[in-house]
Length: 107
Image (tube, rainbow, N blue to C red):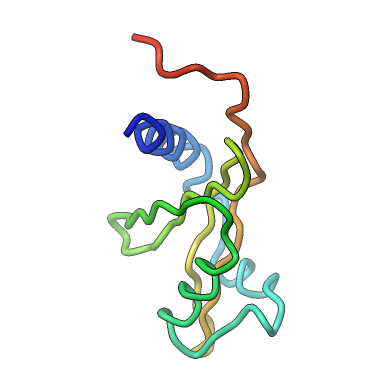
């Protein structure tokens, strides 16, 4: 339960930093052809199969789908589901953030 809380707090902090920093079309252009799929479900399923630890899905008020991903021990990043010309993919919005050496949330 504590790790979910840490992910949520980290995600909120990072989300505040990256809001408005990335255009979806630029993010889609950065994806390789083998990272694009014909449906949202295919893109999400493929992304989930490549994640080593866990994913937390967040929906914004604008309808964007963001993924807080734990792909290595206490290392997180935020990705976004993007679409262009009927293709869907998940592009990384942030660099990896490490929580190594943290021992919980301070009061």
